[in-house]
Image 1: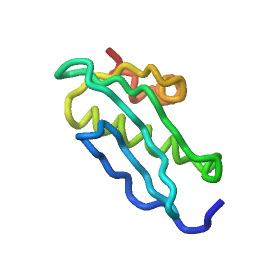
Image 2: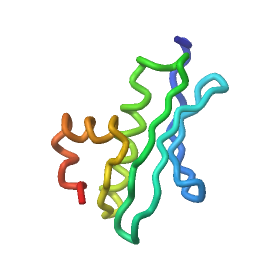
Image 3: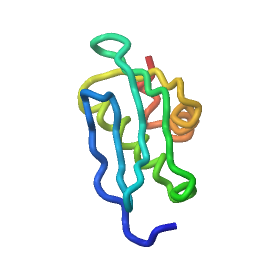
Amino acid sequence: MPSSPPTEIQHDALAHRFTLDLNGTQAVLDYRELDAQTLDYFRTFVPNALRGGGLASRLTDHALRYAREHGLKIVPTCPFIATYIERHSEFQSLLR
């Protein structure tokens, strides 16, 4: 596992993804807009070299806070994100 801390999470609204770059590799959370008020968080990906360091959880937390701040609802079709919401009840109200 690289020793340098992860950089800040970036939101690329045009690509519909949140990204976290670390030492030339990228962890991502992809989403699609279901309608004007609902996002489907359908995929998280963390490269093998970065797994186990909590990066998917950081991305998920950030993306859920983004939805809350923008008054959006979430459909978590990514199993990781669905489980994260089950374990973090403060995000249950975001579910559509």
